[in-house]
Image (cartoon, rainbow, N blue to C red; front, side, top):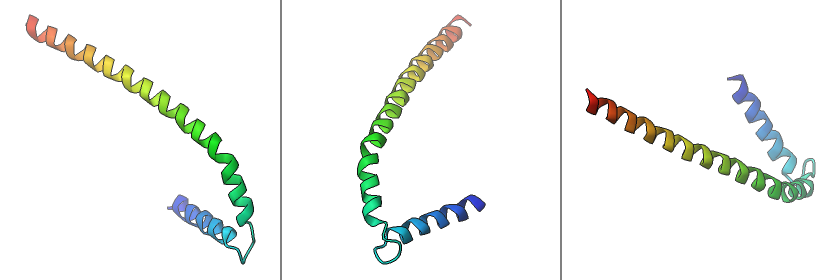
Length: 76
């Protein structure tokens, strides 16, 4: 519950800071987002590759286990 309250407060502060009449941080926020977007997209891409590799390994392992269980059932 505390995490949700803190999260909502941080989101409210972000909106407050981005509005033109209050702190005037709008242009700086846009500049930051422009600079962070390529880095963030590269990071997400690397994570997606690692997830894909792990998924392929999991499918291979599940297939091996399924074949082993079929062999065990055929033997009995």
